[in-house]
Length: 146
Image (cartoon, rainbow, N blue to C red; front, side):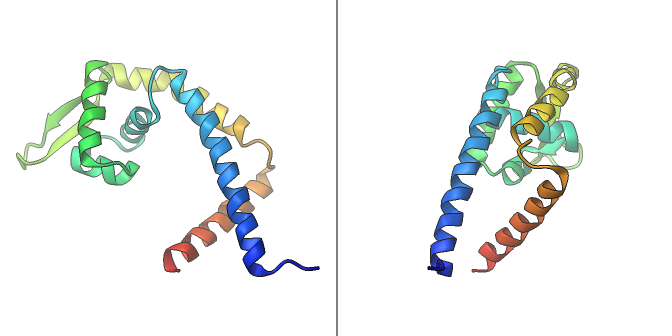
């Protein structure tokens, strides 16, 4: 007997949830091996790839609350990986910026992290990876419209 769309949708949800959990667990293990939690790493990665960011915008970009950003930035400042820098044009804005040590820290680790993610996701070949990316984008857009 053929499965209904509702049954298939439920199965897709379960498979997607389990796959997401397995991937996130392994990526977080990698991040924790560097002595950081995933949020700290996400802040460093954002600054490393996008440059200085207003503290107010970091939360939007990595999806955490402004209160959490203050806590994370404080921790990374104590580790001397980033610093706060006032905006010269607007006193209400403070930027987070990587220190020279923070840049070196990311230089020393980011390629290994990227390779670890590639290993975690190596169950798919290049064509399958591109297909999954396109299908998940389509799925996400539909979910936002539903």
